[in-house]
Image 1: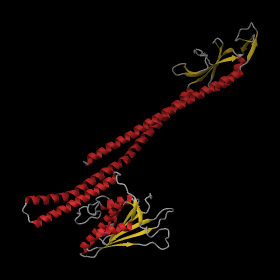
Image 2 (image 1 turned 45 degrees about the vertical axis):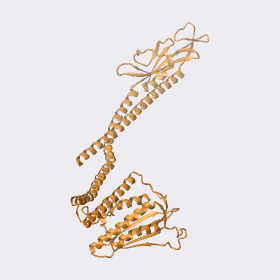
Image 3 (image 1 turned 60 degrees about the vertical axis):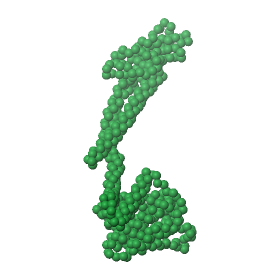
Image 4 (image 1 turned 135 degrees about the vertical axis):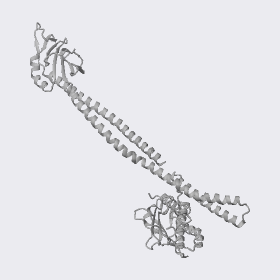
Length: 472
């Protein structure tokens, strides 16, 4: 079964890693596509701006001459006069500059006929008289970016100026960008795959822990239920098998059944409380609780059990110093909390203390034992905050090994798993959940529980609760 769940967790982890990687790869691909088109558009706009700038520079350097009526070379009529563009004078001084920038110029007359060009061989590309930028193909490997602009003198057309720029100024950096993006995305996807595998392990760890907890919880419940149910079943079968059993023996059997059913009822109640707490159903019903009165009530309930076991049970209230003027002695032991939960908390702790002490008595064959409860006020070290109340439950029982102290608040935890409840357990009052419930209630009241213990010398539980319910 464990192998099945192990393979299931591994399969789920692989799926999570693949999803992490796939989603990241898609996002990176979209990002790279956006970068590609942004850079490509930027380069094209830059070339177009350069070409338009060259047109403006050349336009300002054109030499326009007035000619006679008989001369028809590159002529235009303007206010009863004929003008022409002196091509040699106009373009001669621009040739060196445009060649340095890989820019070529072409001049067309008003009829669209090519008159002058910087190309070694005229290109066979029809004139587009509109002032637009376009890309043209000279061959399968040669492309040009061109801008054409009509040149006018007032409303009269003198000709057309076309400026060309080789397309490799765009393709060269674009190709390098594509290679860099492919390499970068590949490396990042590989890294994300590794990181995704690591993160999926972290993400699935709580699930594995929950499974282990559920597995342990199920095993513990089975262990807790198996013995009492089997004992109840045995006693009932004996009563049914021997209907003429003496009444005294029958009464004994019924008392065993009663005791076991009470134990099962406590177990169910404890499990229900923890289940409701885990699901967030349990809420603290905050009200003013006099903790001294609550402890007196709990001790009175436990006093009979303590007397039967020969254990002295006492409560000590530590008074506040006279210098403490900001707290009234009448309500110094009042806190904001839930009476029922707090009563259950201290009932569990005192019951545990009685149980530890009884085990010590059995171990030493002695009737001497004591459980001391102390309540005192702790001043707050924080400004504008109320203080704390500390309850100490101290016994002189068998104690708890130091190495297991961090685990005693775990559900069903025992120092010696083979130990039955009849022989005592370190993390149980009656059901194995007493200290787990105590820790839950303390956390629910935003408090703190501390345990100190020495083997064969006793255990001390310290519960520190904030007076105000607003503590976080």
